[in-house]
Image 1 (spheres, one colour):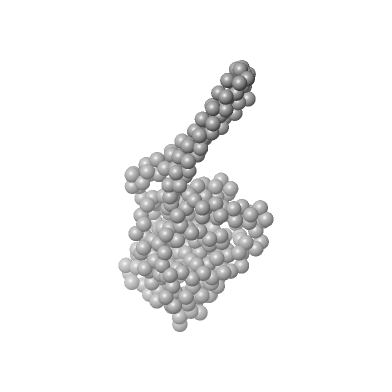
Image 2 (tube, rainbow, N blue to C red):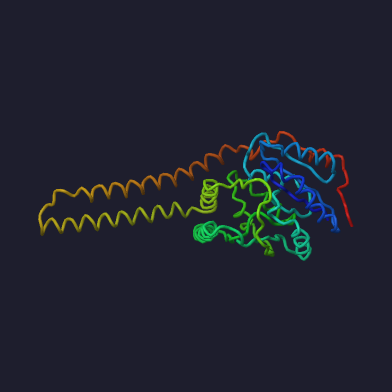
Length: 319
């Protein structure tokens, strides 16, 4: 079999060589062929030059380089589209996804599983981060129509059948965690210890994580719109109750002129709800707008995949 290892990279110049050495030392002991497909997502450091060096020296290494930064979702999609393996492993290039798990993944793939998923624990994470992650997944599973598991990310093996199903989903706004769950197929989960990043800094800031969470909610259902209807109806009912209460009070106690606090409170609450609902509706309309333009997910500046495959070069093999 041929195994493709797809590695999205953004400013990972300090990790590329160590990732290659570490991963190939493990794969070299296995009884299958492999290729490493790196995707340079518009890095501003020396990631591209490192990938060029590896690609020139080793036949099993290919790379795709974007014209600019298109985001990790686009980088993952490009790598998966170009990968030619019977099975594909998707992983990060910072060594936080242990390459030692790849042989185990292949083992369960050969047993008939179409998705072999790596699930990390939260050991070593800050208490606040761990708590927020638990809260995030708890809330997400109440809103989205697919099941998301805490600790499960992009690190997984996909069979060619599962990969083809995933690639048939061609929406522009992609949320891969949900897509992996949506396609289904027989799954097996491998648990592993959380690994601290060795070089560089995490690309995930709080704002990016927040936006990623919003993408997950919006991408897989219309529940926020439905919630807007329910909340609007609830506010309307409370408004009628308030009017009736004030009417009864006026009939029995006369007109109370001040009412400043009540008026300001009503304006702030209802105004806030209206802005929130407009934002939710606008988010859905914006996604329709992007989908209707049918722009490509990414633009490639250069790549070595096509040339290597057309020349029918043999991939590095160790029995």
